[in-house]
Image (cartoon, rainbow, N blue to C red; front, top):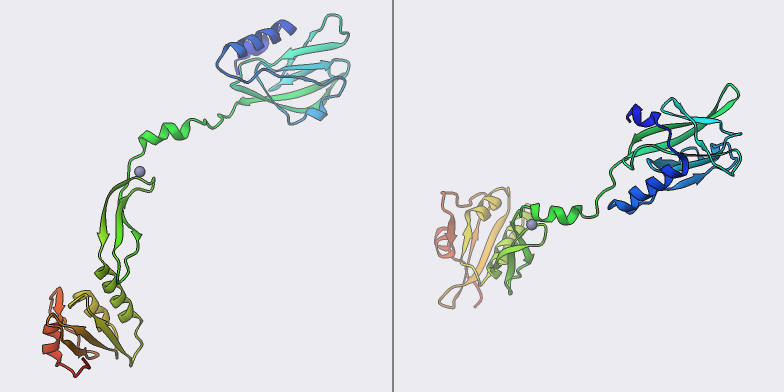
Length: 263
Ligand SMILES: [Zn+2]
């Protein structure tokens, strides 16, 4: 706070009226306040926050004067109101004042006040101002889970809700995911039995998952394109791992041997 501002004694009501005029005249809607301490010695107001332009009214036989940040000030006597003083806090509303305790200085009661910059209130317009600055961060997310009998939907979506594209997730994807889950969940010594009529190959990923099992077999029963049910079993500890991406059922059946299956 500027000392020169502090050293100017405000002219009582004139200063108050000026403060109100300035406040109303500006875009701010907060009016200057006045607190009337009456003949209270001020302690009831300890901790209260005021701002520049606010006015303190007090009976000076209780509080002779006050200090702001250690500098002493007197209010102006109000004509016609004996012993009543008013003092308008200097500065605009960017300056705040916290009323402190009343201390004894000689015969006087001194109301101590400290100043600090008014904290900026969060602006209500901030969100709408930020909205245009938002940069979309699109990622593919599954919004409808596919089942083995119905397609799902994947959307290229931002966390703000904007969608920049979409594509169906085939029901076969659900079949693939279910196969991987079945392989992962199989216990040692068990044989997984998978009946397929939508896909006709396993992926390298499925085979590597099966290869992690020490003692689990994968029996496959599928309906071939000629309408004939066929079956083969990939034995534990002997999964294909020759760098291919896909392993067709016909290839695997020929590799591991065809098994009898009820038609
Ligand atoms: Zn966005």
